[in-house]
Image (tube, rainbow, N blue to C red; front, side, top):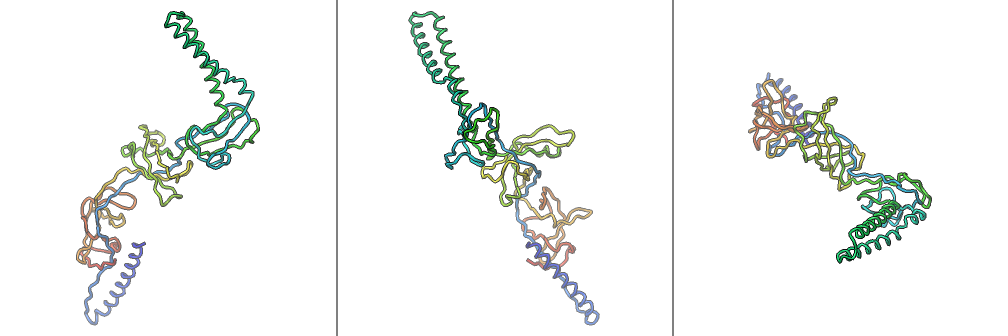
Length: 358
């Protein structure tokens, strides 16, 4: 906005200079009055700064963890109460690993498991094994009798553990910390069949994005390289990420290689499925001279810019280095505190007199 204001001021000043020149030209024939003309410009005092080069790409983010939980058994459906809300679990609720979300009730199935009797049988088999070990140490029983007692205990233990495994299938638990993103409706108290989708959970504190980059960028991309993430919904906030995976293979059809971005989303600003823009930091130079790209004039013998010294425009040939969309690094030709012309340079000539408009 400030640069635009300067340009408007310069245009008005140039128009005034042109009108003055016309008037002076007419008057000069009569009075031979010579007039000193100064071209209005705006300048920027150069200070060392940093410049970064980015590889830009776009894509869709997806969750680092997600799971669809199904009914492993038939049973009466009972959606559990979320202790945080006092209501049954619903879409958007945060859940913790191991938390029971849904229970399936089936008394006949539970009775057939005979889990209590299997537990008691295991305990008795364990006691008998301990007794046989003690007697064997004193020579009271043979090795075969001890082995039989061990087999009885092992079989009883497996029977009880299998019953526990089957019983656990009646409780649908969150496998990790996450958020409920899908919850198909089933009526509480109604028996449902085996194999139905019951709930989908996602964890999106960490998000992933697959990107395909042109093969020319392969030498520039490294593991753990910084990535800046933006989205039109979060224009005022930049999210950080890193490159977590890089394929060494170039796709022969697209001439691209695949990488995976790991995005830190602990603030919850992004959601799985969002379309985002990623800027991969490929190179950065600190404490260097950086100027706006639009101030450079390209000529056959190279690139030049104008500076101001004691009211005189000085043309300077420059060599450039790292550049991005808006700025460019100057390797030679400019130095710290040079006053670079950033507006009004289009009509300048070397050694022209200028008037600096701030």
